[in-house]
Amino acid sequence: MMTTTMTTRRKITPTAAQPQLRVSDSSTSAGFISRSLPGTAPQQPIWACPICTYDNLEEHQSCEMCGVVRDSPAPIHASGSVPFKFDGPSPDDAILGAVQGSKKPVQGNSHARAKSKAAAPTSDSPGNQSKLSDKEHGVSEKLKKSLVLDGDSEDVKESSKQRLQSTSNKGLPLESYKPEPWMMHQGSKTAEKSLLNLVVVGHVDAGKSTLMGRILHSLGRVSQKEMHKNTKEANEMGKGSFAYAWALDEGVEERARGVTITVAVAHFETAKLRVVLLDAPGHKDFVPNMISGASQADAAVLVVDAAEGGFEAGMGAEGRESGQTREHAQLVRSLGVSQLVVAVNKMDEVQYSQERFEEIKRILTPFLRHCGFRDSSVSYVPVSAIAGENLVSTPSDDLFRAWYTGKDGTLLDALNRLEPPERDIAKPFRLAVAEVVRSRSLGSAAAGGKVESGAIKIGSKVMVMPSREVGVVKNLEQDGKALQTARAGDGVDIGLQGVDAGVIVPGGVLCHPDYPVPIATRFELRILTLKLAFPMLPGAQVVVHAHHAKEPGTVTNLTALIDAKTGQAVKRSPRCLTSNQSALVEVAPERGLCVQEYIKFRGLGRVVLRSEGRTLAVGIITRIISYQ
Image (tube, rainbow, N blue to C red; front, side):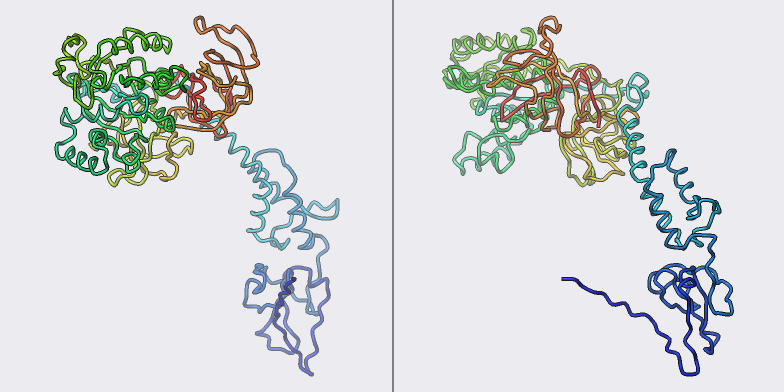
């Protein structure tokens, strides 16, 4: 249905003694016209708008109907009209010429193009080169700007995009970075204990949360009042054995289901270490959360179930589906963990059998060696979390003490022997965002994670990737305590000022503004395939996990098969990859990932490829092919 809009125009009705004014078409189209009706009062002249022909009073400087600005009054001829000047274009020609000119590509920068369009003549006569002002053309300044900008919008956007890409992707060369003196000066921290980030992994129901909850309670990190509350609530739900686990599993769903879902964080100390405990989930549905936690770790505790059938389920033995003991061990090694403590839990269920402990040790040793762990970096400790045996003090059970002399010490002793790795303090600042923090003390824009390299202090400028917004560090906290500085290895919460809270996302990176993290859209990986149900082909759809980021992607190319011992290519462009093969492949995520080459930043250069709930391959980034 068509709707018709009626426009009412002011009419001046002539009287009998006042002949009606007649204006020629040429005078109406000549531009702005000042006129008055013969015989009317001289103080009421009118002028006709050249665009909509509406009659306006002389006192109005713009058309009441269409808003076109009135030009300075032109001289009135005896006929009451202004003759059209044929040495210039009409208003219609001026507008049409401007529109057509804005669509033509013009070489040069945007300022030159805007200037040339504003000054170009628009006469229909080929020989006419006179320059007319915008007012003579009947085009307002606002119209001129909109026409010029519309014509240049694509060129401006393209040049801005290239300029932003050149500065954001590359930045300054990493070799030019020099840390400031305050970054390298540890101050009073030299007398403090060393920091160690410890992740606890293992098969579901192996007793990870119960084990660490019991240690925290024994060390006084969980109060007796809190334990009494957890015990009461667990008994009411018929889950009395979960009381110690609830010291870490605080979520409603975690307690209802009896499994860890998110990575819980706690703190305790040994004789020489300050330990940041990361309790990772063991259920196969939450392996992505486990990867996120393990990416922050310096060392790991692998908890295995000594009960009959429990250990075998975790290893996927006897035709069973591959368990999380096997998968977690492969993942933590691929994510940079080289030190491992194997806690053989639930020894009370096998009457503290030495034969069972030795059997588990005999099976695990070659497997962990195949994963890349050195025998000297792996220690085995038999424990019972529910009974509290051999955790922080020597065993008290007679069956246990009969064969375990305590030469290797308790579990706490084994943790105290772990060595913190070297920190990359001399490199530009990097922090992979593990979570978005909501805190009154930190403000609305806050992020939590581990500082991978460099150092920051309150007042430092940081760039939030991938949004490329720059903010200032307003607050720093660690375990709820305010800090002035944070260095590589520290797990901190950072409150930022000057950025929108929506640009901080898990999987993003906070970095030095002059040395930004590239946003990679395609990169080359050196991978090791795990147990594959089907061969990996070019075009395979995978989920790319890098630090805390997770993004669907495609294996675009199988570059070469690699000899795992020598690192040399043995076959170019293989048709497919099968289980336990080393290869170079190219991967393209659907959206860009904030990653870097492994040789430059190890924490941002490790990648895990998964599909349909299974881990397909682990590897490192050897080359970034294209950037966003």
